[in-house]
Every structure is written in structure tokens, then in C-alpha cells.
Length: 349
Image (cartoon, rainbow, N blue to C red; front, side):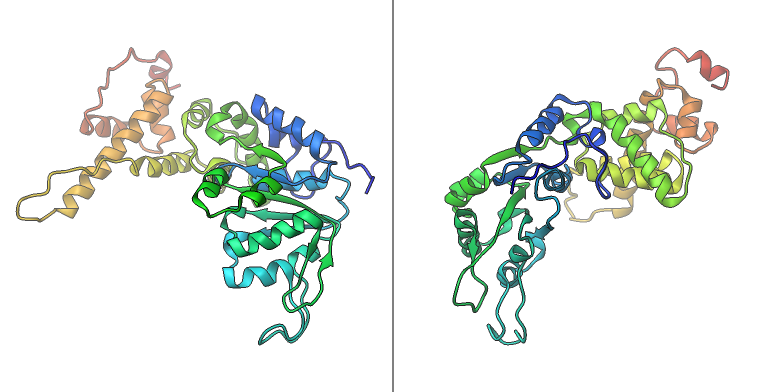
């Protein structure tokens, strides 16, 4: 095939975010964009790695859409979602009568991706037996349906994704070394969101605008203090977590929805180390009360810091009264006069 695909930077395709949102401002993502421009038209296997939620499927889709094969199908196989006993028939199909219940011939995902792109998500989950059949496909473009006597030939570009370290899987003997080299002709490693904080404002703006349109809302952009809080957050769920958080914000219409979610993550780090009484009894009510109090203290402290200790603004962000905030600060042993009062606080901001 000699046709050339559209250049990266063109209008968004289907439901994909526009390229400036996908690649942002960070140097590492700009380098990935440059690599995509170079490899999109080459029929080589690509391995996309990265933590869960970093956007591996979006990159795979862009590879397809900006390639000469963009008029062909983009077929995704979510390897962990298909039981091992069914994966072979899903991938390679079967002939009529190949096994009990095979009343008709069924083409597999490989065949469906002919003259297009086959995207194998979480390739590390594929069983060793199927890895051998996939290796044959990558070597000579041939595969065999279950129950067939002859191989079939197919033209397909294979793009794989993983959140595992496949080199370690090879050493452990759970992933074939020869297959690893076949799927890793070109490697793209997506960074976690915590390493590209300069891209957060553009991503947040995109998600808020998209969800406003989807749900018929007119929620405003985030305040400066809230944006600073999100810039400091570690984002264990990466872009997927950010999208869910912005959806919750748009639906509920208040930044308190964000604070509540971040506080829930903070609660997972609460220290439960304690001395067990000699009689073996534990007061669940007391532990829960202390945990809640500690979590509330952490949340109030974070919001106070994000708002430069402006207590009236903090009360509004937390959606409680100013008097309630002062009470909670005293109860949590937080100093009321830790810093010089903000003049804007006295003026009511």
C-alpha cells in the first residue's frame, strides 16, 4: 500500500481529543508526537507501554488514523477480558464443525482486521500457546482457523499495548522472547500524568468543555487554588482518573466534589498501625471516629494551604460555614493564626 495518511495535527478524528490536547506542552509528549509522525506510514509492529489510564488506546488509534491503512478496520482485542479458553477462537476464528457448538464458520479478529490495524491491548496477558500463533502471524502474515487444514494469509498492522514490564516477563518465562522482539520494533513509552503536570490545564479545560456539552451544563473552569491543588496531586489513575474527576465536577457543579474525591484517596494513606489491647478487643467505633477526624484534619489543612490560609475562601471551597470551619480547625488543633491574615479575608474576598 502506498497511500499516505493525514499529517498529525489535523482535525480530531471520531471521538478522539484534538492532537494539541493529546500531546500537550510537555517535552516527552511532543517527542512522542514526533515519533508518531515518522512511524505512522511504516508497516511495522509498535509496542505502546505505560501505566493504566495513560492513553495507550488513543495513541494506537492515532497510529491507525494517520496511516495509509486508515480506510481499513481498527480491531481491538482486550486480552484480559477474554477467557483463555475462548481467546484462540476470538483471535483466529474457527471452521464449521471444529468443535461442539461450532454450527457455522466464524472469522476471528485477525481476519476482521485485514488491511487495517489489529490492536492487542494488554498483550502481556496472552497465554504462551497463543503467543506462538501470534508470532507466526507477525513473521509471515499467516494464521490458521481452528479446525482448518490450510493457513490463511492476511495483511494487517499489529499494535500492542501493555502496562507490564515485558522484559521482566521474558526473564520470568511468562512471555516469549522472540515474540517480544517482533512486537517491539518501535517502542512508545507513555509517561504517567504526574510527570506531565504542565499538560493539566489543557486537559482539564478539554474535559470540562466536553462534559458540559455532553450533560447540558455550564460549569465554570476551576479556580486558581483548585488548579494548584490538582497540580500537586500524584494521579495514580492518570488521565482516566482526571476524566472521571472532571465528569463528577461537571455533574455536581461544585469544587467540593473534587475535594471529596481527593480526600477519599488521602484516607487510603491513613496509618492504621496501633497497639492491640492484651484482651484482643478493638473499638471499631473509636477507630472510625479517629480516622474520620484525622482525614478531616488533612483535608482542611490542604485546602487552607491551597488558599493561602484564607479561611473564608476555604469555607466556601469546603461548602461549610465560616463558623463551622473555625470550630473544626480548633477541634483538629489547627492554628488559627499560623500566618498573617490575608487582607482580602477581612474584606470578605
